[in-house]
Image (cartoon, rainbow, N blue to C red; front, side, top):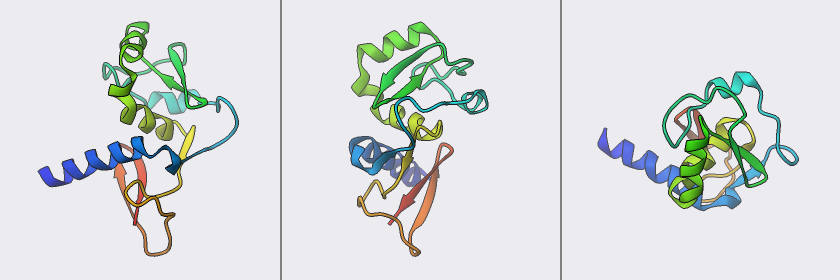
Length: 124
């Protein structure tokens, strides 16, 4: 059980560090609907994101937060939250994972996938 948690954490970190494995879903600032925001928790304070009012621009998309205090904490140390920020972009449909975060290869018919906090991650 502990080994699987470590693997998931490593997968998220590698995904955060390999931004080339992410492809934008659409043009500048993709629309995120209210139904999608209901599924999102603020990665800074773990509270629900109830509106798109509190956000920060990130990688030609938007990161959503529960409050302005959470925005301030994020802005104070964005590197600390990089993996969570990338996860939220995929979870909200603003970005799409196009390659394995471990190998960088595109998935094929022999690829598997794991689900990390609601996001399907292809694995080679």
